[in-house]
Length: 191
Image 1: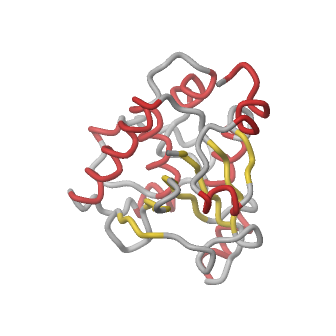
Image 2: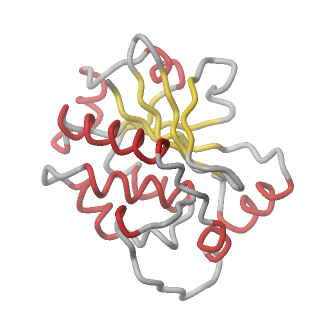
Image 3: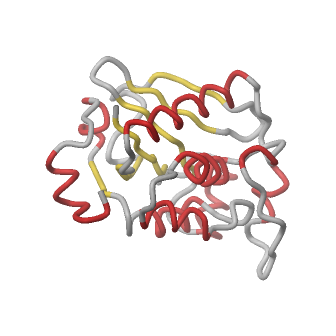
């Protein structure tokens, strides 16, 4: 299984156009679990409960998304999958207030962990789930621990993750490739 974070870079709605103007090139983010048999994306969407859907090339491509491969052990991948499924099953609501407040300068709210969040917005979900599941000492887990999940935007999250992950194509994600040699070579000692 491969763990990827998808970053939507196309603003089709008025709200996403505002988000892009205020917070940078990415308007949404989601966690993608990819195997040769299926590709699932998990995310929090405005006005909806945390959800999961199957992906194919009609839904994602390199024109609409950028993807970062997340180095994870098999135990961490299993934890991520189980945590995502639990968020879907428990119907975690969308955190509209924190999402809107990400643009307030100098805001420093209490940084909740996964089990203290009653609701999640997209980038917040990525941070708290990776923080809870990436337990092996690594630069990636250290980076997640340093972020305030309640103030992070998709663009700011991309800037952090790209330092410790590997940018890949939609084709790689859709093929369900795992930690193959091209990922390991690109990641160097962090994997």
